[in-house]
Length: 130
Image 1: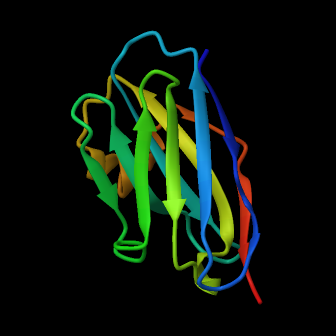
Image 2: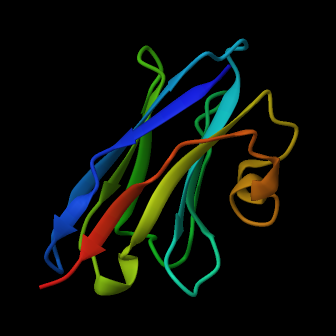
C-alpha cells in the first residue's frame, strides 16, 4: 500500500518562502506521478503542480508559475514543492497525491483528472499572513 506523508507547512508572511515535502513509500512499480493539490474553505480543489517520474515532466497552475518549483529525489521517493513569494491567496491545506503507472498526461492528472490519483496524504496547512 502506498503511503504519502506531507511536511513543511506553517505560517509565513507575504513574500516569504516554504518548502513542502511529500515522502512516498510502497510503490510497486518504478513509474509514478505525484502532485500537490490545495483547497481552502469555500473554494474548489486546485491542482498546484505535478511531476512524472518517467521523464520529469511537470505541470504548474497559472496561479503559481514563476513562484513555485516542484522537484523530486528519486532515491528517497520524495517530492518537494518550493514555494517563493507567497501570497495570502496561497493559504490552503496542501495535499500530495500519487498514482502508479499513470496512463494520462501529467497536466490532465493535475487538472481535470485528479480523481484518478489513487493515494492521498493527510495534508499540511499553509497560512500566509502578516
